[in-house]
Amino acid sequence: MRWLTEYLETVDLRSKPSGCSQHPLVKLKKLINQLREGGAIRVVTDERVIPVKTIEVIAKKKGLSLEIVSREGNVVEVYLKK
Amino acid sequence: MSTRIPLPYSPKVLELFRNPKNAGPMEEATVKAIAGSPACGDMITLYLKIDEEKETIVRASFESYGCAANIAAASILTEKIKGKSLKEAWEITWQEISDELGGLPVIKYHCSILAVGALKRAIRKYYDDRGTRPEWLPEKPSREELQVLEEEKMIEYMYKKFGLQVQSGGKQSG
Image: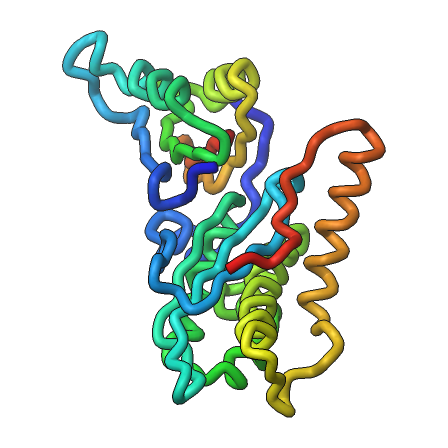
């Protein structure tokens, strides 16, 4: 089992990508694929750009639990846990 | 837009979730205790470095497999007990931790109970390992210890009933 200090990486889906491979969604997918049992990722997104629904679909497909930690306007903070 | 609604976490909970203090294992810990079960979604390992002569907690750290509230509760607890005597630390209640976090949503009370339960288990284990028990340490488990045990047992029972496997943190280790 992995623990907090090793895993709590943040992916900010609001950041502007400099290229396709740098797109935060690509980064998020890579991190999710690397996630082991007990691992977790904090995701910040803007619902107008990448809706939480998208993250929910990815999380469900990968068997991750999802907690919406905070919401301020369109900005949502999500905690994904394997 | 997602229909999920975030829990009403206080600014303190959010701050500690984003920047937890004392997170990580401690190799030189005098004692460690686990509380909870990953099956129920929350589990915490608490490490204490104790000055054995003064019976004081020198340092504390934690590892968490849990939600935002679980991380925040463990973080604030490890800060609070630093420098406290074991007796003072024993007297901390889950309500105090919840209050210091600015209040927890009712369904997250168990996160605070889990953190304090782990602390009490660690203190009890420290004395059990040495074959002693100070006067202030009750023979019977505290409310938090009992609640943690109940939660672990319930999850174990449900997993057994449905033929699933559970990795329980119910046993102390150190």
